[in-house]
Image (cartoon, rainbow, N blue to C red; front, side):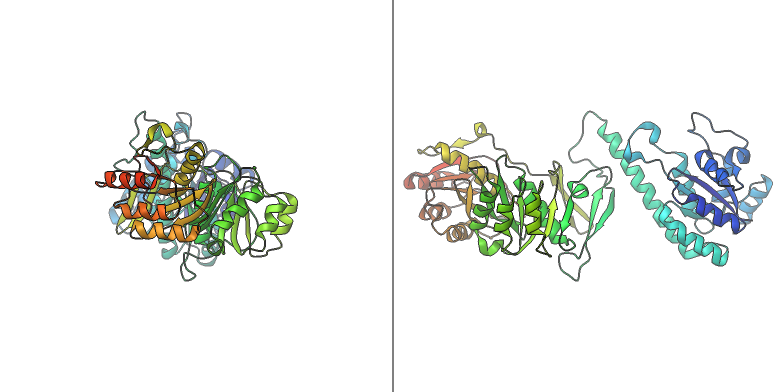
Length: 502
């Protein structure tokens, strides 16, 4: 009769699997808690200690690490010398290994670094020509079905299960390696080996386009606000819904006062802070920036959504609204819009790395952070910003950092009025910002994500009535641009920090 070795931490479905094996005439070998559970279910089980002649030792660190076990798993039954070795040492081959590992990521520690389990899994997966290995309870049903049908696990299924097993082991080892690296006092921000273990946690409605598939993956051992977010209503989320909502939610959480951000195609098309602390006002001001682009956009606010805000938003076609919470009467209004995705969420965690795919690998960089410490900025013009302009410059600089380059933002009274995004030259971005603001930013400020290479961009902002500019500086023509600002009576601040975004 074939033998099966069962040693699992997660005992979901293990009794049912073992029962099916026993009914099919298989011998069961197990140890510890798994053996106890099977005994209690009335099954006949051989303890690993009885098989090897050695009890579990070293506080259960050594249980299955024995030639009797591993020779039974690793023997190539098509190799006469292997078969002879088994016969010489009276070792029975093992045809099925069922193991799932200690949940290391749940509570990382030395004692949860599984040794015996991964060793069993690797051996069985290597020898999948003769051994089936199962590491997920979700695969028990198909194994049971095949054994009941044919008495064995098919070649194709063994190969598939082996691939799953090696993936599981790789993920497990990555989680351990990342934890160990975090214990080191000096961490490289971009190490030689980037250990990326991920798990698919959400299937999406579709990808960037309906003919593309999409899913959300989470880094193993990481937490995400998406995992605890609650979708109160609306359609299933798509790839772009998540992508744009992430951008909007991250930006709105950078502001302390009641604020609203509206994002369309990864770029903000409306951002505002309410001086009155009213989230309804913040939404109305943000929507007023560019109501045409806001149609079909993502709305994020950093305060509970009130009925007043919900009633203002309801007539505007919106894909997603995300907030810390919703008043009951606000939800009533919003859920009447059947397609509107209504999400309550916790603030996002600090992002450490940005990762993008290229041929054969990734581009990796530290995540961009925005320095709002005015003591590190420098006024380079004769005219100094007013207190109100300083507040607007900080606001516009924060907004500009997430706008696709070349980026220009016009703002006044902490309300964006014109956002020029994604142009190949800065002058066109300035013209778009001026056109969108339509005179409403007169007396306000301009933020530029990179330096003005020529004075023409600065002249365009002056023509739009801008009175203060914030930019990194660093151009070989800085003096020319500063002179232009002085001609126009514009205050200009250099931050010495660029914020390109592609």
